[in-house]
Image (cartoon, rainbow, N blue to C red; front, side, top):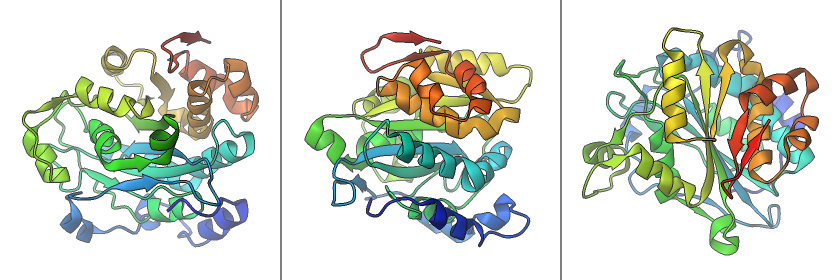
Length: 301
């Protein structure tokens, strides 16, 4: 995987095939038959160097597909992923991006709590995104399983970026709820087919992913009572690596994703924001008010 390159014309052609109403239920082709593939037992994803990507850089974008977040999948498919990729290709904060998408649910209640595409460099990244199954679950149990993406990144990805060059990739999750405190042994067995000696905490899973990836989380502010507490919970878990964006500003996700990757790669605030659409720059700047870089220094905006 990871061959080819991304073009605007390929995107325009793909988008022309979407249903006229451009609703998520008509864009995403995955159906309930995917529940038969709930386990990711033995599944690995590789981001490898090739003639098209001689310095491949893995990027994982995980997004919440529980009931409250259907609009996020729609936004990614119709707008955000395409624009984020175009920013990465045009301004090159990283060489040869290879992008994998994760659909994240709730390992405590959903039949298909994690789905993953391949690492791709061309329009296949969006074709595979729209082939995912939007279960629309979530258990109303105080959180979602964003840490499934961390477990997968740590244990089920193989990248030349890390193995050859000891350089980290990028992992960004997006959602509007807390992360469950633990991933239990039974959940790990059911989702991945792996047997572990004990339950794993959110902090342990995050630390494992951070060995090979710069990890960030984007919190969606719904404007509801209690939102500030779940932002605080995320900041306690990932100090300096949490961005907050309002639901009404979801169209600025591409600029935010690009800015997070750019800052993690050592770009300054001004350099990152100078490259993005200036109508979104102010929102992106506020969202990443304080981001910790790989060397643990704080960049304040």
